[in-house]
Length: 129
Image (cartoon, rainbow, N blue to C red; front, side):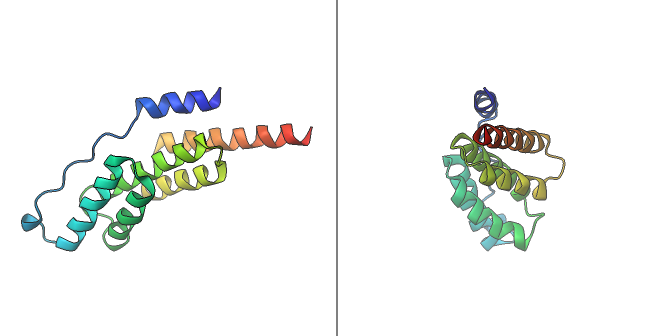
């Protein structure tokens, strides 16, 4: 039941294409632009691990660069949903905690963490019986 709720939530919040980066010649940071554009490309394709890897490179250098914070938060969020669907709750929780490190007010990430922890406790309790 919980998985169905999260899957429904994921379907209604499926990744929307991130804003297209401006052309590199107008960008003051060509390397950031290249990395950011690559990360957004991975994100839009649903390749969340690679999106995270690339977007983190921009984030650590300049967290205020363009939309890197929201793009990185989305990549973490959807990676967490994939892990949750696979029953890999600790990894899902880790991804959603990463969302909160980028965006502390992210309500969905907080709800997903609570659900995953509840599900983990329920499974642990069932295993003990």
